[in-house]
Amino acid sequence: MNMTHYMELLATNQPWNLIIFMAIPVVLAETVAITELYILYTRKLQGWVRNLNRVAGVVVGLYFIGIIAYLLVNAVMPITQAGEWRTIIDVIAVSTYLIGGIPMVLIALQDLGITHKDASEEKKLAYHATYVAVFLVFAHLAMIAGMTDPALLGYQGAASHVMPDGQMMKGDMPMTPNQMPMHPGGMHK
Image (cartoon, rainbow, N blue to C red; front, top):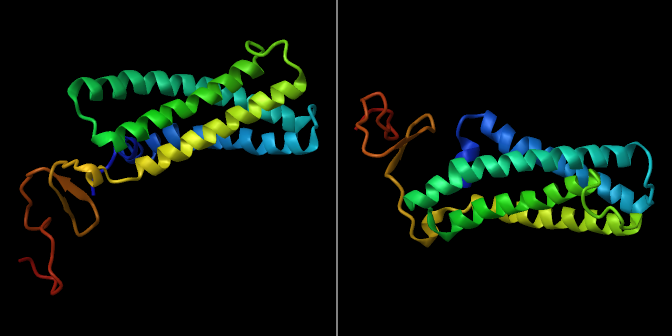
């Protein structure tokens, strides 16, 4: 199966890319989302839950600034310049991931007092909740598109061979006898 660049990024350099580009930002963003629900339900604008919400919001927003900048320079621009997008599915996966970080950046700016300074606490809660909702929509779009095989829209990647141990061999690399797939009897063809 072919992969989008989004999934390829997460699958490469295991487990580090998965931790850097998925686990850390998602755990922080979900912390913001969960504490946001608590704050909206209880209207407790002070206390440890609000402090956790604020800290997670600032950290994830600043973190996404780094991710967005890094991926624009090291992935989006080179892929675009080389014309290597794997159909619109690939473009949607990568762009919605990057766009999804923008609401988190806006939360950080609000929690740092840079934006919405003069807004009431109720209005700030509304902005915060809206940013969380927008993040969740784009993050889920990125995951859905990222897991979709770009071959559905005609992408034909390099030929690949699945090894008996589940590893993939790409391209026309010759296989050694030990790497050749085995038929049901256990003997090489």
